[in-house]
Image 1 (cartoon, rainbow, N blue to C red):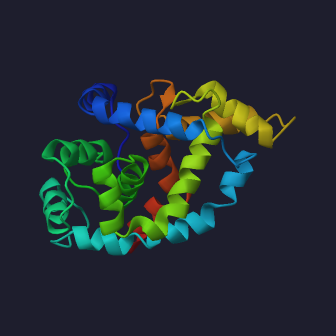
Image 2: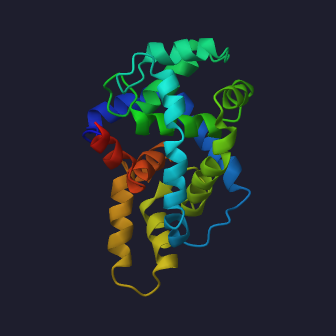
Length: 224
C-alpha cells in the first residue's frame, strides 16, 4: 500500500477529512449502542477467509469504476461513474470520500483503498448513500461490511468511535488470557492500525489494516 504517511501529511489529511470523519464517528457510535455479537479477537480472525473471498468479489465493481484500466481510480473516474449511475452525491462529498481513501496521496485509489471506500459508503447511512449502495450492487456485500463494523465495535470498548491502545490490549487479553505474549500481540496489531500514530484508531484506519490482515495487499501486488 506504500509508505506510511508522515505526521505533517497526516495532519493535512485529517483536517481536510474532518467533516467526513465526524460523520463516520457518529455512525459508528450509533452502531456501538446496539452491541456486538463477537466475544473475542479470535472470532474476528476466524472470519478472515470468508471476508477475503467477499472482498475479491468487489473486483468487478472496481473494474467498472477504473475506466482506463490502469489499476487505479482517479477522482474524475469516480465522479464520472457516480454520474453514470445517477447517484446524487455532491462534488464535495465525492472529493471527501476519495481523499479519505487515497491514503498514499498519489491521486489514485488502488483496489484495497477502493474496498475501504465501499465500506465507508456502506457505513454512512444517508439517503444519497443508501441510493449508492443499491446502484453499486453493495447489497450482496452487506454481510461482510456488517462483520467489519461488528469487529470494530468489539474493539471499541468505550463506544466513542475510536479504538485506543488500552482497548486493543483489553480485546486481545479476552482471547489470550494469561499468555505473556498477549500484550506484544496487541501492541503489534495496534501499531498496524494506527497509521497517523496519534494513539487512536478510526474506522477508516482499521479498514486499511484489515485489508492487509486478510492478504489483499500481498495478493494484489503478486498479480501485477
